[in-house]
Length: 155
Image 1 (spheres, rainbow, N blue to C red):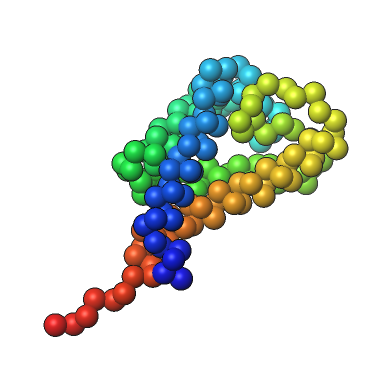
Image 2: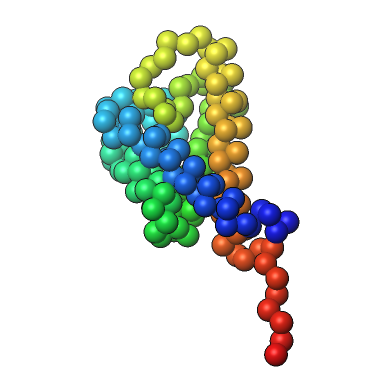
């Protein structure tokens, strides 16, 4: 399992995850009203929190993504991204169980005009994609714990 904590892999996972979150944040920052509408469609939070969430969450995603890309505050960024992914997975799963076919608003905040069946299929894919990104967070966590390194020899 040494290979899982190898710096070669870790830096690439860190940068890739950072880029993903920067790319996801930009359309939300550019169009907060559309993102607010996406949040509303989830029907999970009080309406009074929708606009503040639509304004703040993309900046958190952007800052965490940039932190991973530039290698600063890596542990904090990794933890926040892991928590966001967990929340996204739960929110989409709840709507999938409800049969509420939504556009996740992950990378594109414009309404896609898809059928209910297409949106349900997209939601399943998004859960799998987010689980994959959560595995990336897990790799970063595993590597940061020094997993796979040799124990120090006693003098």
